[in-house]
Length: 199
Image 1 (cartoon, one colour):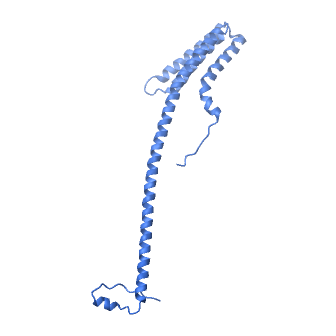
Image 2 (image 1 turned 135 degrees about the vertical axis):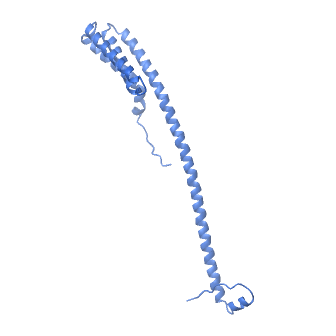
Image 3 (image 1 turned 90 degrees about the horizontal axis):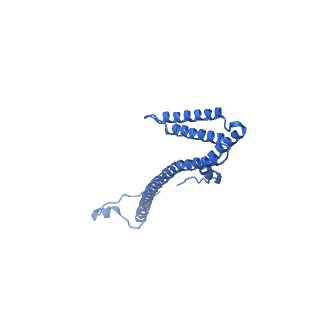
């Protein structure tokens, strides 16, 4: 009921959606800088990037095997393997058409993978909101019932106090009447009421 309202900054909303394009663009830019600084047609650089890409892919395969496999580590290793392969080809190639084609394919694949996680995250967030809403309604209902019960108890106590006050007033008034004789009431067969002593 007293949920804090947090307004997210527009950059915080856009940043996750732009992350795949920023990552692939950064790899492309760095690869082209590397290409301009001597990586073009360099066999040693191509072998290095191939070895690094294969090593990252093997690490991802090892991390995903068995029951103790970690999906986050495996995903990170496979992403690093793809990024290294992309950087190697973009750094080794002559012109821009092949690196741009690879950039488009890598960006599309990154958004395809990210969309799956975004859907899962959105589904979990909606399920959490529904669960929270149901619990809030249940608690609100319990609070309303308890408030009604407490109000009824207060009214009952107030009515009892008013009755006791009226009874005391009636006893005092009866005792103050001229000619009031409690023994005459007892002789007549009426139950005797307690006497009230006045100061």
